Length: 465
Ligand code: SF4
Image 1: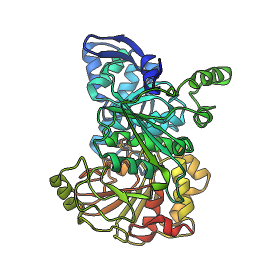
Image 2: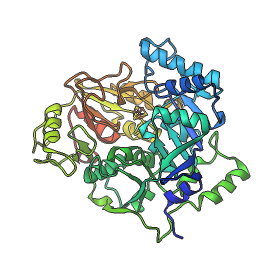
Image 3: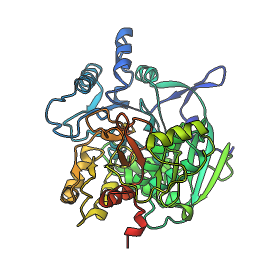
Image 4: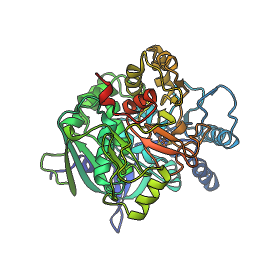
């Protein structure tokens, strides 16, 4: 029987079906961090049970670590407490931790792939919504709640209902200045922030196939922002070459054997999806958001809609615009900005930094803009330094920080002041996401870096030649 890629992976991980349509699913990899794991470990302690499979569990500190002076004790009491708690828990339960100071520390969704822990065909969970990132490798990867973190620590399994399957196909070639972040912001603007609710999305088509692994991760990362449970892309030669030789990937003959299996991970030609959408890459322009959910996106050179888009109410549309200080029908090109943040698990990898550095080399950021580059991991940071990217950014007036989630969610000191605009490469523009009252405009690294230089929202296409 024909199957979708999603069903092939899901079926191979079902431990047992349960009455009522639920299934017990085996989880291959469990990533944990300092924010959603303390209660889960407490639960294990209270029940006097160990972590069932310590070698399938990997921890890092990312959400509230400082991005300056990481060698010093953390000044923020809550951040310090949570990071110390994570260390204690990992030591007590025997879980590998790549914490502050470790050469592999970084944002959980950056380090998994770069270490080769994330591999095609796996089921992967983490107490974090953007676990969907790992779907770029042809995995079923999704975020879970704290009680589920405890379940996975205790049993390496989860009781789940199978979601519906959606396929989004993007064919064609992207124009110059348009990158993968624009693809996903475009898709979410079409489907709305709730358009994927109840579905697991497979991304397909020639435009998706042509993307690097890092660009594919950006796409899958934001699946959750249209309400989907997760997103995945069938693995191919690009995937295999990315995984080859990485620290925790199979090596030598074992790698070749794994690739032979991974080649079977695709949706059969006549597999049936519950919903399908098709888009043309040529229709996609550099995108920005104007509101307070990622579905409120527009091509950078178009005006804000004059009425709510499908999936949004008039009240929330007006409230969003009020929060952002924008007006319906307004064109945002030329709008002055205060901050630029290039980082987060969406866009903090080496290719993002290379793209931004290439644009900014020999230029200066606008004097009134504060601009911050936060690499996604120690490995990204080291690579950027080896290539001299840090020097390019610093010469252009940017700050080059140490790895962490940073201003993606402002759990550390990297906050955007109330009322100020930040063009951000992160994934959420919710009210207060980057700090109380902060106004977030989501964009690609290219649009973000160009806006930093110009000091206002710009169409990067006009600056590339
Ligand atoms: S960078 Fe942002 S979205 Fe990604 S894991 Fe950290 S807080 Fe979550």
